[in-house]
Length: 134
Image 1 (cartoon, rainbow, N blue to C red):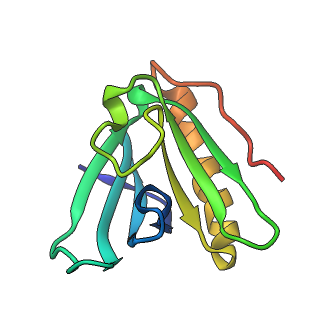
Image 2 (cartoon, rainbow, N blue to C red):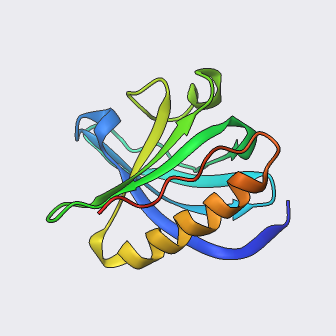
């Protein structure tokens, strides 16, 4: 697991929990995919201890999309090639894993998507890169 010298993006996610809980974490780009490390940081019930580390392989990614919002956090969406690819991720969409990026990290998110798309298109099962939406 050799992490390449690429951007790291910090994210949070509340949507799957209907704002009753929140996870926070970071994503890094590795040679064969994107590693997500996260932990639950807020919850209406006692917050579980520990963190999760998952690798979403480039061969399982159909597209990476970044959507900027004027007021709220930007959304970074990883569309999967199969339901199995994201079935263990905290998501309400069975075909994608979506995280939110604070506006203060907008440039980091753009750099992350550009670097990930370069590796995604170079992968044998790589998808067509998706440019950040304005």
